[in-house]
Length: 371
Image 1 (cartoon, helix red, strand yellow):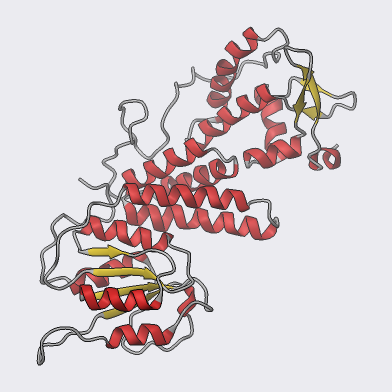
Image 2 (image 1 turned 135 degrees about the vertical axis):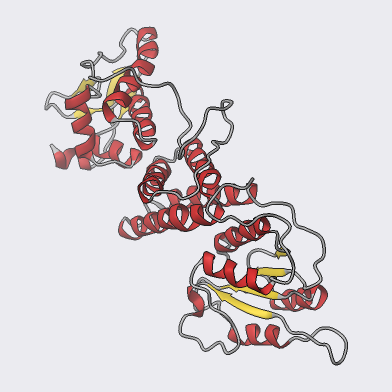
């Protein structure tokens, strides 16, 4: 049975209202869609009655559209920390009205033990009540490792399901509850790496998952980036990807964190031409230039050295920008006089020290939500 289900070939299910057959999924295909294992689906069937409405003559499970909707609700609730028995009860209750409207609706499963399940909830650490759709707020100051890991697991499962709404909710809850830096380092980056590893082991199967997750991470980071401040006496931090480099997410996280730290910053984004970088440094006179290179093929050390040597100011009082190199593309390359921070926290600490003579405009608390 496992071999047949793992093939993921759709089979016909029960007839729809117009008499046409609705496609049904095998257990293997549904498991890949939801981001859980086939064993988990069979366990939910045995324990909580969340089984398929139809089975073939060989007792192979065939999951219809209504079954999938019920299990998607189950996944959302369990990823939010709701106990499985309560989540199963809530999933069945939400499926009941649809089943009542359909003459061939799924048969009810056995009652699950435990108290009545809560209503729809926005997942997030220590979220307080608020308007529907509003970002979850938290007074959390030091996130627990278990809470952060739970956030990451829920985010990864939602991404594998291509559940954009839940991905957005969990990212918003992580940034609001933990702050930009912790959300990036302990939730977003591990999830992106996990999806990347899954992509590498499954061929092209999870490319769409990585694209969806990256898009929503970028959207969340930009939403939590404050408006840039005015000109600074020391010059801003210039953020740019080297020519040919398209990976901007780390710079977007640094841009958001710098804005909350009250430090002046100018973000130039992906694949900035060398001529444009030179022109921007000449015009802005930045105190720091951060260059991101994801791949060794794009990391141009001559360009970084040229920017580091650019002088600005009157004779006798000329200054040069500090160049900070970010990304694995710079690994193993000598960078005399340039900095190579290992983490976002290290980069922020270095930049804050650079501007120590200028009091920040806003309090800088990396471990909590912005006030």
